[in-house]
Structure formats: C-alpha cells, structure tokens
Length: 145
Image (cartoon, rainbow, N blue to C red):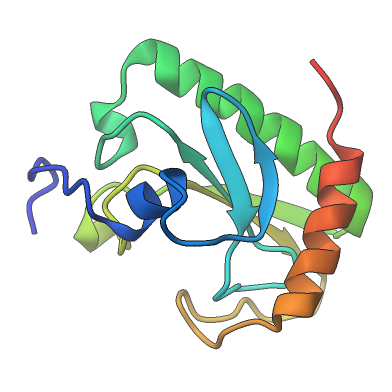
C-alpha cells in the first residue's frame, strides 16, 4: 500500500471520531480524541487520534500536527502519573511498511515496565472493565493547559 494513498473516510478511527463505533475515551477536544487501545501492547496502551482526516503525520497540516503532539505530551504525562510505568514509548507509524495498520493518523502511548516484554501490535483483546478503569485513572490525571 502506498504511503500517499487515498484517505478512506470509513476507516475505523474515522468511524470512532464520528461516534459510529464506541471507544473507551480518555480525552477529547476539538483537535484530538484519545482512547484506550483495545488490543494493547502493554497495560495502559493509549491512542491519540487527530481529527484531521489524513492517513499519516506526513500529510498533516502543521497546525494540526502541533496541536496533536502537544496533546500527546499531555496525555503521556497523565499516563505516567496514573500508571507509574518505568518508561513510556510514544510512537506513530507512516505507511504499511512502517507498521501502520489503520490509515488514519494516530499516536501510540505505551507504558513500559522493566523486565516486561512488549506485546504484539494488534494482539489479544483487553478486558473492557480493565480498560475503563485505566482510562478513568489517566483522564483524572490530565492537567489543563
């Protein structure tokens, strides 16, 4: 699949942004929607999905990218406060060869603990009650700008 293919307005993240598919919400404003990854690579794996309808970060407008990354930082700090991991991976994939599987730009915030292996991308589905509890803890730790 090409890095610069057509944006599909019916991708799963577009449907979540429109409220057509539910999510376990962490944060929402006019720029992004953040929610728990239902196939987490580690406990607390959180996604930040910009509202701009583009496939990847290379296609984002500068303003949308700036707004998104500021929110990624804010949410990652909340993940750190709420879950107290030993480290945090912040990642974003551009194109299928880079690991992108959903072609709407999004950022991953993945808490890491020393000695714990990172799960497979898109691996097993998480327990929804656990995700809701994690989301509530992260949301409560988000600082206002």
